Image 1 (cartoon, rainbow, N blue to C red):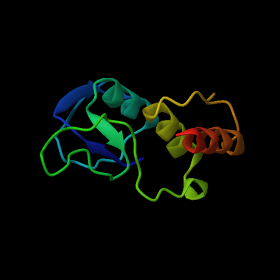
Image 2: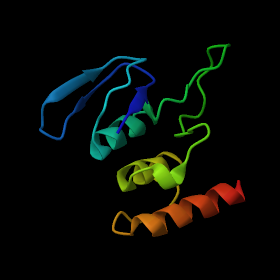
Image 3: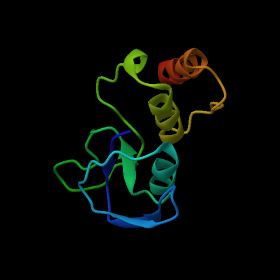
Length: 108
């Protein structure tokens, strides 16, 4: 999945090695690596910006402008849900996860 790195960070990869990320990068990483970066507030899902013109950081949620959830993979939906604190079970089907995300988005 593609993420946007919001601050410099080094994490342990799935292989157990250290990997350095630089603010502004858009690397393809695994869901677990995204989780580590998200917890450190060092990445957001997709290519949406995290800074406005004033340079103030936003809340770090995985906002995707004009997101088409139907075209997202299950892993992308899980990452979006995690980034937006939407309670989903990774064992759920893609359709169930999609329904939970849409329901949460409708409530906002």
